[in-house]
Length: 146
Length: 146
DNA sequence: AGCAATCTGGACCGGGTTGGTCCGCTTTGA
DNA sequence: TCAAAGCGGACCAACCCGGTCCAGATTGCT
Image (cartoon, rainbow over all chains, first blue to last red; front, side):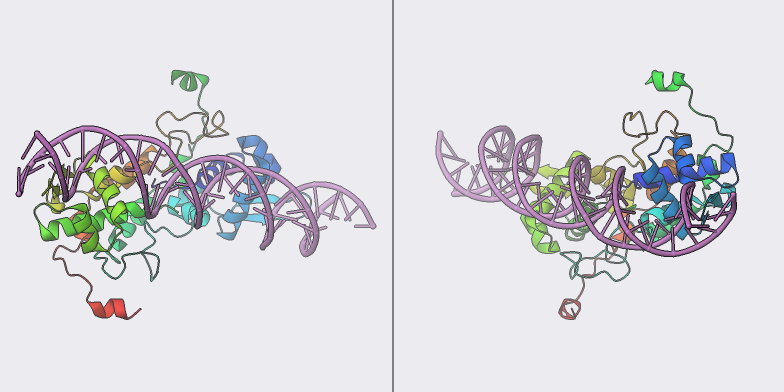
């Protein structure tokens, strides 16, 4: 475990494409450009829109556009937008009745520094850093190498 | 998301108890001491044993004992023992056919630095730090309060 | 030598969450 | 007025996790 949802991965891909092309792009267009299924792209875009990372423009000639360059978007923002708050365990912020041993649990609330450490690590990496600033697609050689 | 399994949480609790009591303890005994169901404790101990964090001694008077003080066990070791390798996405170390857009995916392998950052953050925290170095179990008042 | 306690390894099953799709509504430019 | 596009939600299937159980192996004790 300890992984982010696949949707988050898609989000990074879509954002990358969005920045690479620039301007306003439609969900179907981004779907074609990334290879991700259209409904999925739409879903991701909706989430990113709610998180304030992109902006949607309705009507014909509408689409989505980036609100900030990816170099200014920490990865944690994307993860929070898709996966929700970063918390390694359910035993955070006053969740009761979730842990069967909560009344004898010596680590209640102790994960906080861990969560903070993770958040910090994720905030220090921008989307641009993992989204290939200069979009270079993997050549077939790499796929064949494994 | 981005959370560790509950089993990992239990593992920390059990390890904490193991160190607090010291010596060799049985799975049923640890179950009673932590409030975690016995089969679950047994499962966790098995995993920790395979990971080399604890050692099992069979036969009557058998049980488990710590191989290292918790202050020397990074949290990442426990997470790896329970949850497996730390990798935020499925798109790591040669997984193909998992991503529907792998042939056009511009972020393939790009999560590596992220994984490294997480690993680093988790390696810098020991189990002892989140497991209350001086084991103070919640007084009955707390259990009664809910 | 036999017994019993304990770990070991595996299979098993139910529930919850995620991933993915679809539908109807709203907005807005042509 | 129409159609293209986003918006919000509901919906369903597949996968994975959490938790339990059982048979076997090992070993100290009597």
